Image 1 (cartoon, helix red, strand yellow):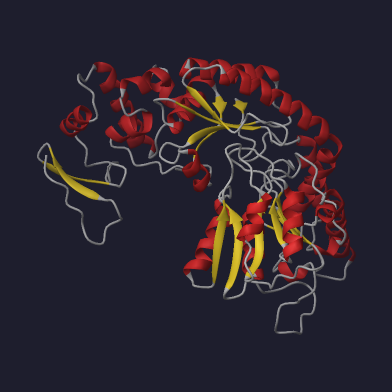
Image 2 (cartoon, rainbow over the protein chains, first blue to last red; image 1 turned 60 degrees about the horizontal axis):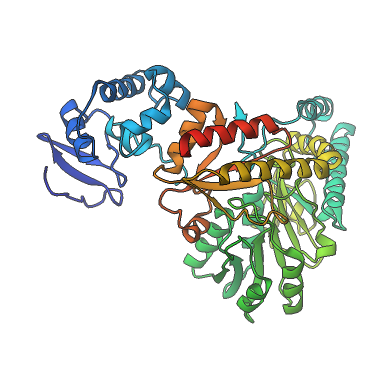
Length: 118
Length: 378
């Protein structure tokens, strides 16, 4: 992975990294700038970086659901839809990702930053 | 769904109030004060009656000094920007919502004003003496929240008003959270400006709020246009309430507020006692959980039914999502548009989880909330 390269004129905190052979832009919280600029290889690299030692079928199940839902609906699933769609309670799902639901699952799946009140 | 986000907006609303407002709107829905025909006169007369009700409800004297706005943020912008002059100083507090902080910061950035923010103590209260100490010869205004939207603590307004009065500085009170929960008596307390919103504990619809002005407070209008009076003048009227109401007002919202105000006026004292009893139950239940931290709920004597907490090893947003997705409980997670409160609590990075009760909250819902939090933080 390459060093960070802040780009002039871009939103503050935006950074571009080389991951798994591809240049990827992230916002100031580490969310993908572009949903399409995601790959399984990039996910694996970011997952390890976030503290997931072994990527299991459960991780893939969550990430694939999130991406398919977003691609089809143009938005992230509601909390209830995430639980029902994955068949995993969110408390358990949160535990699968060391950085939790938003910073973990959602971010690693390449979904946009929800920019809620924080 | 178990709704515990009443500090954001009350839900559900009393259906009969909305229905009553809609029926009335269908009956008289002409433009208030914009014509001499009976329907328009009747609409204006109805709006005037609502001003009188609000005036009475808040313990003010002059109904024509009740002005309608979109919400409390709108009213605060009107008041703050309409009262300060270049070089003025403003006193506020670190408990404030962005509806106060952001107007102050923007005015400061424009070089028009300076301001100081009074801290709150470890129980979530402002010390009136510190308000007095912050007042300078150039202080034009003290603007404070009546009750913190994060902590629920109700501030000692009467003491603060006495300090302001002694220093000759008007006090503007943001009653967004408190209006409809605890009694407010602006005249008796010596508050010169009161700001309220209709959609929180006044149980009205969104899009309607207002301000109540004492006779000695005359903000300059910052929005100009049609008022239905003095149309020959090229300038906006200085006559109240139109001085601060440019354009057609939200009649449906005003009718909704009128109906809900009648409802609240009848029930809020009993409702407050019941909600505080439920808050104690919630506090005691959550307080027993090992990985959960509560903020400023040791003293509940001057408090709204609001409780804020954090859970070790969980971000507040994730706790909110889990409560929603797994347990069907709606709470507000994050910074609650009050970043300085979180900075002082040490919760700026991950925010906090806020439970806010309302008149329709039940004991069973509190039990469910405690059990859900036990699953997360136990």
